[in-house]
Length: 360
Figure 1: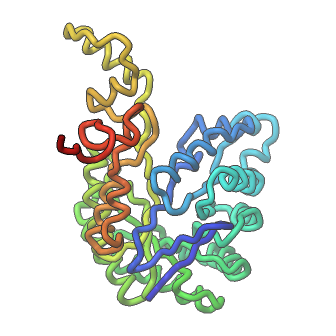
Figure 2: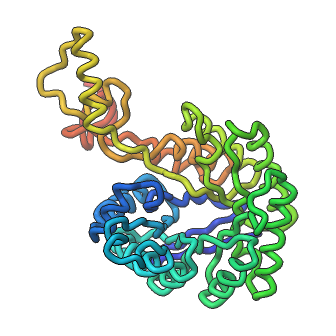
């Protein structure tokens, strides 16, 4: 049975057909996160560390670390900063160092820059996952030797020099090509995790059906594990969580074994809380004196002021239980255990000390 091993210094994650679904946390990625890029440019890694801890607490199995930052201010001072081949090999080791300092989860090193991938491999403890190689000839020749040299597994993305095909047969052929080329380098198929590329269902009505069919073929014909950028399926649509929550268990049923995704439900912002309070005040609602923000957002179903597992994590854990990858439902029960309120620790039903009442 195919098993892909990813390790930190102290912890092992197994991606496999009969293993619990592997959640690869995607939050440590400055691409499209202007505030994070600006912080990294200033040498501030506090948000990276907080994101690492929040994702670990939410149940991520592996943490993706992406170094694709844009240093706009430094670019004006030194034109070399306009080149990711200059920036990312310097940034990646520091990102990995900071993440490894606050969590023991295995790491997925994520960059389009080969120099950053190798710098990450040098800095990373254990056996990281490398993200990624494509079917493009230049990329194959740059990345596969690194995979072999460092004996690590790699994400293989199903596009090549012709781009991303809408034809699932073409995407399968690209994946097969990567697996075969990896074998030429002495890399076994169990160290290839194929991303068959999930298209947005809002733009392509058959996107869901396509990826489920592809995942089955990849499992049955190539014997490889699979992953995807899970949120791509709902891009541009309302209630994205609703679509993602349906997609992930269906993908698991088709044989998908991991996903690169956000496991965290982000905290409700102070601005959203103020907006809701103003709305209620305009309707004549009077809130109890001393109500804190957490009690307020809980009362009105807004979420939480603290990071917590997202709804997608609930769907994944339920599916793990239903697919018999959670013996006796232990993880499901633990996931849904409600923390006692302050002063209620050690109390049983109805807040009484102990479990059952004794008869007089």
